[in-house]
Length: 278
DNA sequence: ATGGAGACCTGAGAGC
DNA sequence: TGCTCTCAGGTCTCCA
Image (cartoon, rainbow, N blue to C red):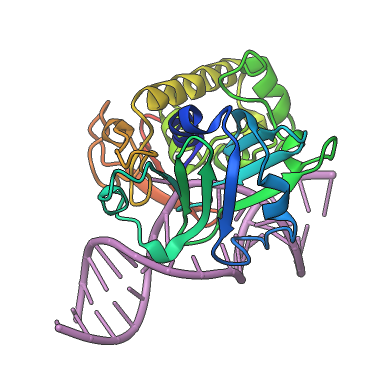
C-alpha cells in the first residue's frame, strides 16, 4: 500500500478536480470495504461541497461544507481513478479490474472519481462535526516542523521494541510504512534489529533527518510503484528505482557491495546491509 | 501497559 | 497448462 509519499501523490492528483467541487452523486457498489459503510454514508456526502482536501499520515481528509470530515484510506491496494468521460482507455491504462470499483463520486464539474481496491483493506469513514476520530491522536507529520531529532528521541524513550517496529507505529511518527522505514534506517546506518529506546542522540538526529529526506525525494519522484500503486492518471511513480535496500535481497549494497539481507520482523520483511547498519 | 502474532482480502509470480 | 505456495506498500484486535 501506499505510504505517505504515494498518498500525497494521490492527493495532488485529486485536488484539482475535487477541492471546491460539489458531490452530485455517490455510488457504493458493495456494503463494505474493510469496515461497513455508515448507513447514511451517501446521504451525508451528496450535495456537499468539498471545501478542503488534505492529507494526514496515510489518510486523505475531505472537509465538507456540512462541517463533517470524510476520511479515505487506500489500504494496501486502493487507488483513485479520475475519469472525465472522454478518456475511454483510462480504466484500461490503470489495469484496474472494474469488479473492484467499489465507490464512485460524480462531481458537479463533470469529473468522475472511481475508488478501486482489490484487497479491500482500504476504508472510508465520516466524522461528524466536532466528533473525535482516531487519526486525531497519531504522531507528528514527519515533514512538518513538529518532527525532529528531539521529538523522535522522546517518542522512542524507554521503548523495548525494535526500531523497525517502532517506526511503523503511527503514534511515534505518522505516515511511514515498510519501504521508507527500511530506506531511512539504511541511510541512518542503523540496524532494524536495534532496540528503539537504545539509540543515541546522534542516531536519532540522523534518523529524523533521513526520514524527512527520503520522504521528500519520494514525493518528488511521484511515489513508488510496486504492484499496485499508480497515481490518479494511471501514471507510475519512479522512486522504486532509487531504493537502496527495499526489495533488493541478495543484490549488492550501494555503499559496500555486501549482499543485502532480508529478515522477517513482526511478520514483515526488513531489508538491510549488515556491515553498514550497526 | 506493551509487544508480538494473527486476521482481514485478492492477485501476481515462482516452482513443480 | 495448471496446480500450490509465498508474498505484498496497512492497521486493527487479541493474547501473553
